[in-house]
Image (cartoon, rainbow, N blue to C red; front, side):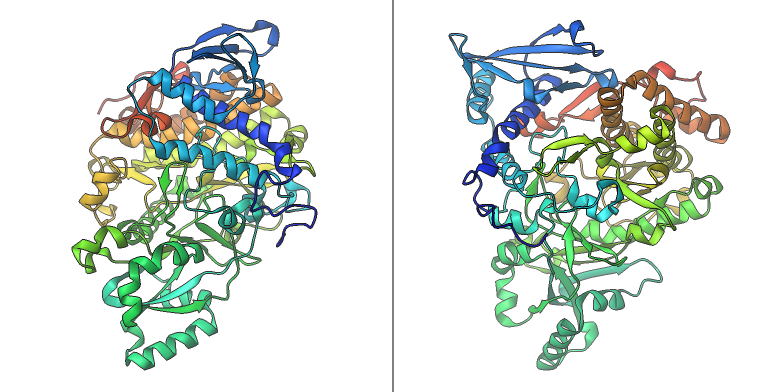
Length: 618
């Protein structure tokens, strides 16, 4: 869908039409409820919890707390999985000082929260993220469903636009700070609008470029840019009397050019040293991450670009060192898989980050370092379509726990319902757990590599809904290892180190560590705590599968792997996924209290009940 229908007031003006108001109350309840859910789970607020056995759902609980002069009550569950708290946002009710009902209000909830926290000030930026999440979700909710096909028949790239629920835990799930409402309409994935990228000619001395061996980077770039951009490049080279090797072509997101790059690069643009060559010819649509673009109707690589927006509390720049490391890590992982019989037999795929370009901040005066850092960067990632056989389709893992939508945009039925009905909930779940878990534990146990494989970084390949294997992605800053504990340290990649200034700003951004628990928890936090727990809770809520049964299936996969590969016994102990507790990131505490001290939570591990006997020690 490439334009708003006539029946809608412009989607760039939320709250100006009945379509927006129809969704507003539900979305405001979600934003407040999701924030409250994290505050309860991360032990920020005290609350009362009363079991609701009459609800007929295991763990059903009524939660209540007083903030300021108001009483908040909501139904939910204390889940078996990591003792997660999941609230039914639609049941959230507020009572004033006299016990009179009040509508749910994000603004009043923030005021009440500030009063409850006392001397601990809530960061204004966090409040803005919450407000922008509310506004932008209301905006997108009035946009009609962009596809008429049966959702289960859509390809993986179309599903990236179809699934609009975003992060189910982080309260700032759609903040997109930096986007105006018009920007959000143009570049938000749920609007499925076509876009083309802009191309810069950058002197080689100001640039970094790299590629996986065998990938012709110049050909890759030329194909994406198209003849018009290449003609502009020829004119630029002729005017400045330069050779082709003197210049690096760099794609930039149109929003980034308009909002971040002209002020940063105006000295070079004014002198002609850097030139804007024009718009490329490849047409893309945004994926869920916004900055990763999928080419339309082709298996060309995806394109991940630097964007100076903030979403889920993270700024989406692309640092040079991560762009440098992307193809190096891809080559390393692919070699580990290609030279291991177990990995080859499992059939899982990595969507390789085959090439990258970036501005080199070190080539600029020190006074401009922070201005240019991470502002121009691109990574080309293999397309899932390259790996699909006849009759196979793919779906983002986090879409498996989402709903189809009716004509009005409201949630309808679970996306996986036809598949579960066809195959049976037990059989389907066991197969999903098998194909998704095996690659993660293999790389951890057999190689010593932790993977940040949350639901957005896993793609499930299926036939008629039956999971066959998975594809993993996002490696440039999404792996972690201890060199001395790699199974094959002689193959360890030579990585560009994290700059000191980057590490000072983001203490969690590192790949190499001596902390073995940090390696284990990297996989456990992303995969077990986020991706699998979401599925366990969803399957229980909508299909009646007990969460303990789900984790027993997961433990079966892990123990079967360990029995079949006793040669890794030492590493099973070093990276003990059956440990009673894991350390996970406390997302909301980070935003409230900052990073001066690590904001983490020890969570009970649902796999611990199924731990095998003692293995060899490190």
